[in-house]
Length: 79
Length: 377
Image 1: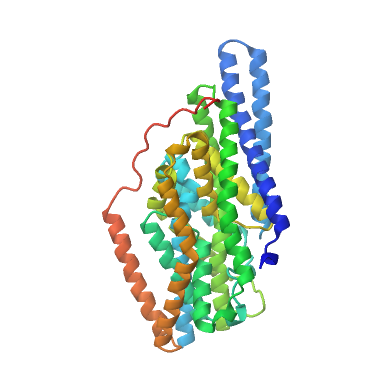
Image 2: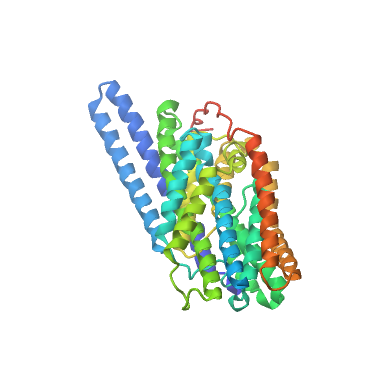
């Protein structure tokens, strides 16, 4: 019976799925963190830091959008 | 004439299953979003319904019919399909009544397995297929999702735990809208396809469609998409309450970690050809996101009840499928048995929905969300 289970795919799932999830939440975490800190910096007149945090949010946003697009590709590829 | 009537009964029953699948699984996509007030309840189910409808048109790969590789397809008749559907609908309604999330796919597989067993005996069932497609994924999904969501929420708190709660909560509520949308689209793609596959199989058995793997007619696609969307819009509020607030009352960051982490696990598994149950993954992720912050705040008794429901899904749906097949055969091989069973089930569903409508509001207003815990929490 054990031959029925694709142990290779199962092992890959065990490390790849958490990795994908960590990338997604880290990416969105960068967006939330960057946006919040950029707002604080702008209010305090620290425009340099604000720009840095906006860049951080942009990097996170790009990663997040890429993850969503990849998710859509996986969803649609089944058709 | 009898075969025409049985075909109509199977099509209507398949659409009824699709409807229960929609309202039973609404919670997977929207429960945490509603709980954290990322979306208003009605907006959440409307968004989810629209995306389920759209998702149903993305994939029409009916060759991957449910229970293929688990039951000998040569032995599947329209009556077996009918009995399997009744087993799945009954289990979906029972778990909905008790507010327990459980896998609609496993219920359908269980129903078909039970009916096929009653019709043809043990040789109709492939044990290896059952192990590979049902038992191992049922063990893997919640564990991987639990650990993943736990790690995700710890990373999230480490990143944003020292920021002001207002902007953090707003940010994660926005993220939850995206993750709920992706889950809804994915659900429509996966689950409406099962109904399309069943109706197509019945049309082949009836002789309406020909060929080894014909595409489903447009009316099949549209009706399956409509049934799952209507079911989703109806909203399985009892299960939404369980997943959204009864297991653990989440803050928006936890809601996002559970949904985002759960979606990443599901889609990665799908990409690897190791499809997991959405219900098992999201429930595991909700538990993981809660337990990582505060182990004792998770209602483990309720989690235990859910686990028992998962264990019982396959045998219970199989038992109902087998009994339904047996009762149907008492009335001969014609349409009378399925017709009587359909009418009885319809009356039961009407009574249950009537009771649900009399008893009230879908979801109580959520209390204000707690701020994210500090990084060292």
